[in-house]
Image (cartoon, rainbow, N blue to C red):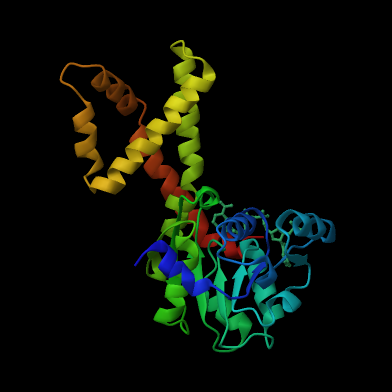
Length: 280
Ligand SMILES: NC(=O)c1ccc[n+]([C@@H]2O[C@H](COP(=O)([O-])OP(=O)(O)OC[C@H]3O[C@@H](n4cnc5c(N)ncnc54)[C@H](OP(=O)(O)O)[C@@H]3O)[C@@H](O)[C@H]2O)c1
């Protein structure tokens, strides 16, 4: 099924984004830009009135601070507040949402069961973990269904996130691992990119050219992995000529413990994701 066909499942639906901050705002903007949501059928909320006014001007949709008002009658309610605030927002919706609506939370760490309990009825809930490259249609989102969500709800959520990148359906037990890898991942890649660009400067390249080389190379390598399905180690071998230059670079990476450092970064972030919902 094409991206556009799947996305058609969204046409005419009313969507409320509760907590249109960085992530909520990225999704809102991307879905509006792609024409998948119409401004008329889209509402959002934030905590502060002045932000609401500014966002309303920016997106051309109704933005307020009243979550109940925004959620009432919406087909899809997307919760985009910080993990510690999710329970409070879901509790506000108690008695105001029906099983005909779908609640999608993008909050790290917060289990579907916590949201279902706060909503207090058999409301379909889906937990999603997108990442910031959704902004340029190159996002990665994992989704896990709650106790009352059906295959149709999963399809609808996937339709939404497919518009801004790729989507994978996982068991909820994997969501903290997803958070540590693909949601936090762009930050790790930016550090790698920044370092490669810095290295380019060190060996004499102008900074803008060094940054372009680093970014396009990162994207190209990722694309080859995705398109061929080949193991990254095999692809690395194909760049590494015997007694050539690359192998010298690889030896430096091994000595600097790049691999183990990246593994430890994902493990730490995934551990933190387990506790975030309950942190103060
Ligand atoms: N950033 C990422 O890369 C990323 C990736 C995946 C998932 N997430 C998840 O996305 C969620 C938001 O993260 P973020 O980085 O986007 O944070 P953020 O920029 O701080 O956004 C949070 C938004 O929630 C609003 N808000 C706070 N309390 C509210 C309430 N009671 N009712 C309605 N809106 C309220 C804030 O309003 P004001 O603007 O008025 O303060 C703000 O716009 C988190 O749960 C995070 O785990 C983030």
